[in-house]
Image (cartoon, rainbow, N blue to C red; front, side):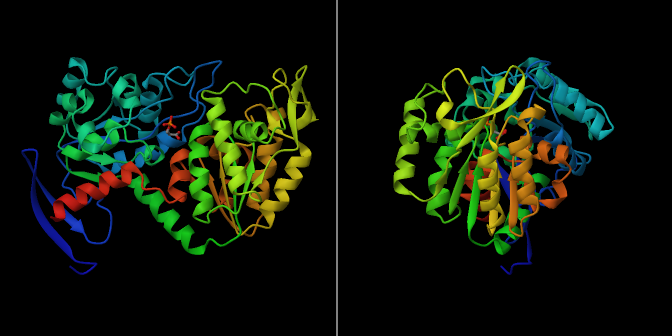
Length: 425
Ligand code: 3PG
């Protein structure tokens, strides 16, 4: 089959007949499935930072991205699913605010199910008319959506079993959740005709273009709070020559500082000793790769106070990197061929701790290297500092992008490939 040839296939999937056009050598997208008058499950990622003091969503970037695919689904009956936050955290909230924001951004009513797969959600799904949109509640309110499964096992979960008969197809657009083998990512796609949404296509296209122009030396700046995800990916990033230097900030820097015996108190992380041991092993395997902060900013009576790392203890919390570290990291960034930043260097939401984040982002914006920024927090920071358009690619994804750049096969991509392979058979 030539690369431009369109082939028409009739397939039978779980009793449902659906006609599929395969655009050869590309990923299946919503043009390739006849979704016009069908009920479509659309898995997006509207997971958004939440202000812990007000419980309000802090920005709407990912919700905005979701509108593109929903609009392009036109007359389909669209059932949107997303997770929000993590169990036990302040950001683990219902999707009610998301439904309101989505309605506003779409300029039309988006219904909110207040349920996931119970009788009320099923009634709402079955009552949808062509062109209507329904948002299910936070998928992580079901225990199963917090666990990883093989596609086949995911297809047997209660979440998927209760719902899939009410859908004709599945559109996967949760690029930031591409690294999670959760039922909504790999389960529906095991049973239903499945294709990629607009965000997945847009991100993959941008990343492919970037891969063609990016050059060494590669510098990765890691900050934020998701330590174990980042640690898991660093090894692969370095081994695959995607990170010649790793500049550490935020909580992950504390783990490496502890591993390097520059601090020796309890950081307060789950499985802390395991993380520290892993960090120590990485520093020993790649001795010239990691840069650790030499100074940090703390809160002293409501003011920013910079101290050397040696003065840190369990009572003084670091909210930002200090000026010496900023200068050193900025110089490395400016002399790099490709710079990738994931997770904010400091708690920039508070202006007195925004210096590290702003300075390193500005160093990236003014560098001649290729620049990639990952995740919602940094995207919000770029907007605040007015330099978003100076960055080559601002991805909606955080942890998923780190793993993608590290060369890992991500469950969401596998789900798309598996369906395409199935219909080509
Ligand atoms: C993200 O923000 O990185 C994604 O929404 C995935 O969230 P998670 O790391 O809690 O799975």
